[in-house]
Picture 1 (cartoon, rainbow, N blue to C red):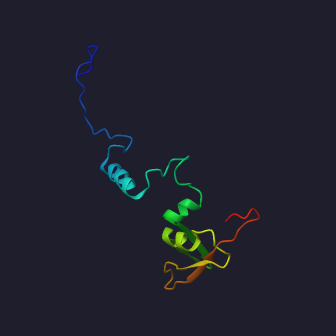
Picture 2 (tube, rainbow, N blue to C red):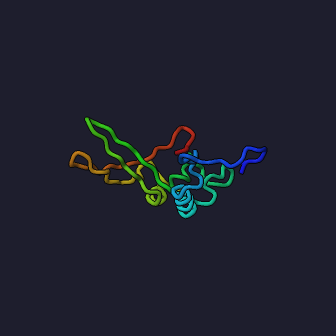
Picture 3 (spheres, helix red, strand yellow):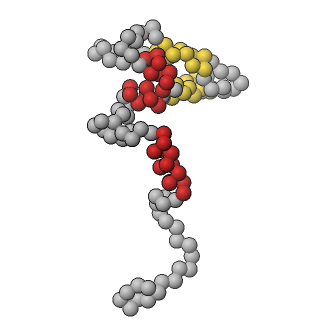
Length: 122
């Protein structure tokens, strides 16, 4: 009942919420986030650098290779990044070898490496 002599409200059609904060999908995604992501994932001061090497060492990264009339998607897992490029003794000769996803009934094996810039940073 609404006060001010308005009375009862009668709903004649379903009124859907305009956000999904209470939906089952939202709750499941938030629960998965708690399991998968580190607790300091979004902490800009003490957390993982969202655009830096630390994030790549944990979560990996993805590349898209295009050529001709098709493209290949390459996922480089975080464990490979940390294993091959995670220490300070990395040289320009250290590379990761990855099989790309199959496209147009073929796939490639590629080598990925990193080079330092003029400031001696990767």
